[in-house]
Image (cartoon, rainbow, N blue to C red; front, side):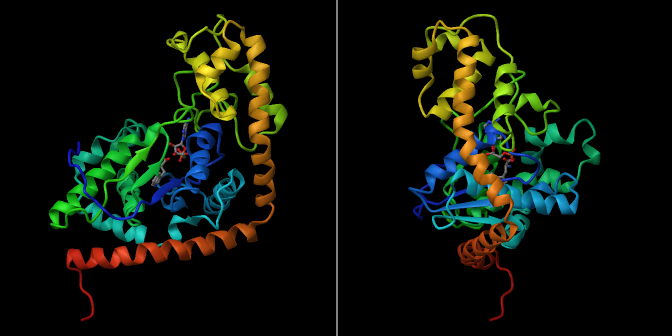
Length: 344
Ligand code: AMP
Ligand code: TRP
């Protein structure tokens, strides 16, 4: 939609958020967490457990709080380091909600009506969907822009929401005649983990909402369960092809090769060079080993963090202060730009 070439010259900052709704799976790990860990070495990073977004679907209060700690534990277990990156709960920093309101007055109904995630989640009866669910992408834009974030690591499913964030930033900058006040946040999507598919259907994304637990590998699965799920993963009867091109039209094979590549930190070509011509009977045990080896240390650390909620809360409390310190000055500027009252 947006066709401006931004000349924003502020510092680069990475922001991303993960919802505290249910168990994290291999798709979240490869599509999001692994990227966070890499980015913290090169960029200022702010990573949020977006509990306000989770509210757009009814949540049991006790479970919401427990799930928020659980996602923070997953960040830490994956290797996000609170000394290098900011880790916090979205609801602990009021700037998100405040900026969301300002953006509500800038965003257009038509833009939100086009969002495929809303259409999917609202289902047939849109009239009964909450206003919060409709407004979800505006809150996401506020998350990103309250920090003037320039880069946003996400899975491919978030591309449309990122485009909307760019449109909102652009519209705000034009409406208030403050060119380049907000940056145009760039999605960071590429990489072998960008789209991990279901183990039961290679055309569907691996998802926490899939009714079949066999469709995904959870960060809470033990090694035997992970290996069993790989063994039971759907495949076609052909052996693996000799070239990456040969994976086209074979979604299950392509997905399993992609998972291997992402976890072994190599390319699909490398995997095909090693396993091309072999059947799944040979490939699956090798894949199971790579999955178990790659995830076991994460699972172990995850369980250790979960056993110490006080330590998680300490990380989240310190993170909230750091996040506020970045967002507050931006919000002061925004209020001034809009012309909101301030004691003279
Ligand atoms: P969610 O659990 O939907 O809040 O997603 C958290 C993060 O994981 C987001 O950056 C998603 O884009 C990413 N993600 C979710 N499912 C997948 C998947 N199957 N493959 C790759 N990334 C994913
Ligand atoms: N909508 C994202 C998801 O479902 C989560 C999210 C909320 C997010 N706010 C964000 C991601 C800001 C990146 C940046 O995965």
